[in-house]
Structure formats: C-alpha cells, structure tokens
Length: 80
Figure 1 (cartoon, rainbow, N blue to C red):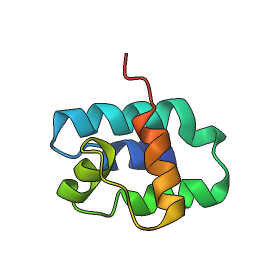
Figure 2: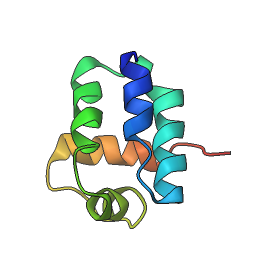
Figure 3: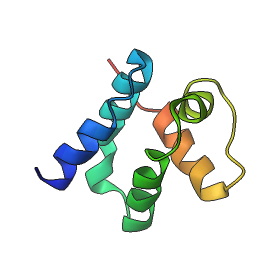
Figure 4: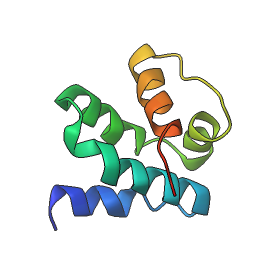
C-alpha cells in the first residue's frame, strides 16, 4: 500500500461528510501541497473525529495558525 492509499484509508472517518470532504481534499490538493502542509494533513488525520468535524465542517478554528490554514483549504474543497 503506497502513501496515498494509506492516507485515503485514514480519510475514512465513519462520518460521511468528513469522508467525502477529506478524500476530495486528498485527491485535489495533497500532491501539490508543500511538504510541511502535507505533514499537517497527516497530523490532522490523527485527531479524533469530533475535533476534525468541528474544524472542517462546524466552522471552529484551530488555535495553531498552520492548522487553521490547512482547515481553511479543506473547507474550500469542492466535493462536487
């Protein structure tokens, strides 16, 4: 299993809206992101679902500015 396949598996959170949003972000943006933002995405996937949901869907903002930048990018992802 390569890195993208592993990340795709980790994007499956058990909450459909998170699954769709995170997988769309992975497909559309991950490969073009700078390495530090890729690391932040990987770290984001280690948070519990309620926190990821609050940040990416619920409109809450992470305290860390780089995570906040990543979350803003995820929110802007087209899932169509």
